[in-house]
Length: 477
Image (spheres, helix red, strand yellow):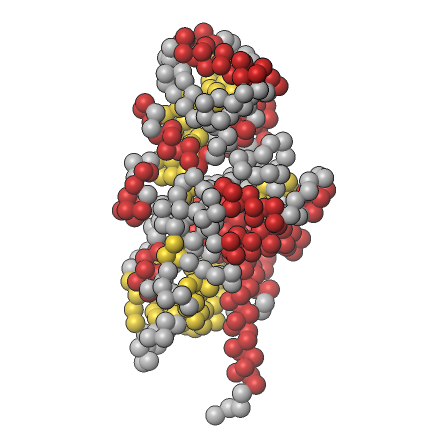
């Protein structure tokens, strides 16, 4: 992979106004937005079947002031959502980008629902850490696989060209930093070149590249990677070679609740509804309400790099709304015990320590005092037998740093000015999760992918339309 300097005599096999690299949620939404502006384009996807990181997620998109919230009596605003994002990342994200994403979030979700038939509904019953109200929107099965299927169907209905098994290996850039085209490689080694007037990088981050992870996120270099294997850092490496501004490269989304050895994501809703995590010694080691991203490193720091999710029948029944949880249950990941004695024996942990953990929660629920980690307990959510347990580990899901962009999704050069015709969104771009693994607010990944993807598609199309309008008004030579 490299960057080829454009030569005036270089001919491309074909030319299109707009090229989008990546057919995950970000690229598909960008394509839908560009399509509505009437701009001819193509989406290039390295895989035979478009999936991306979205496919492996729960498919939750946070959005403010939507009709879905209004229908459920939820009061929210873009300002409130932006404040929640900044509170979680410690004010480290670009406030203009945060506010832009919050401002457009509701409109983008409603546009996808009303224009393209994505069956969104508001996720109710609990709040993810850091969110001050219910604003997660998901498709009925609560899976990224279903969301991707809906987006692919919308792209097909719109007649959008998605070229699969087309791995982009080179960007062609002229001395004025204008992208002139790309070269792609097919599985058989053959190559094709496509010229373009604008390029959108929607090819996610670098979580699948061990060398880049070790360089930028050493704390998770030994973590299991539970993201798309195609996330090799293409956009980051291209941007670095082009002199782009790179920001927050240590930012990432981890997850402290991946069933092992089943490798199935277990929703953090279990913790938010009253569940706890203990290590193999029967002791809690953190506040489970702090956030599932930073919990990955905490779980990996426990003996054996594992923990046990403990919950009860009430939480088990509520978790049935998540297809991933149902799959984990069917696969045998969920173990059930009638008593603490049986659970201690079954999980091979000291009974005395496990009893002390449960006694502490009961005492704290009566006093109202927080524990040593800052979590409080209520009597209504205390765990009661039968007890349920799932063995989990920590994992890296995707990176959150990348190419710096402005509020129009234009990539910024290291000198501070935007590139003439280069856009980025989703995992390819700098997100809004700050500089490390603690600033990730649930849904930040898909927020940046879907909302900034829509902005990138629209802005690239509008810029191209303006150029075409100027050319149409200019006298022929």
